[in-house]
Image (cartoon, rainbow, N blue to C red; front, side, top):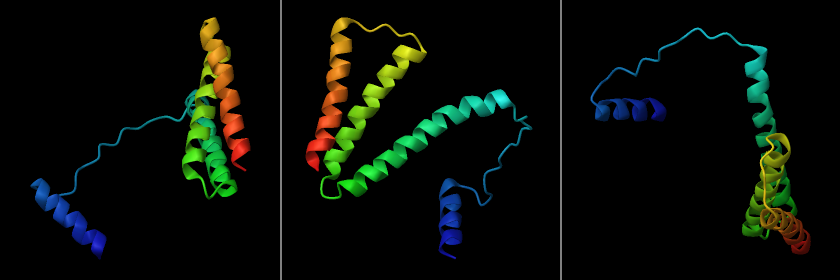
Length: 112
């Protein structure tokens, strides 16, 4: 009942009693679209699972987990960009990428 009241209040505040109409378009599901969406979705799921595991392993240091996982995401993203999309990185960027990866591993390892 609370949701109904909240919805009604929101719609009245918006200036109408009718819920917004959603326009439906017929879309075909194609294998290429599924593959295109499944790749990043699986990486996102893996990142979320790794993040949860890291929080379970280090419940006393959430900021450390956040920083370590983010450093790992940056390093992995740069590596994937370099290998999969042939992005060019200069020497300084390559050295920094290696240091970021090692720092992420060291931060998480030393926290235990």
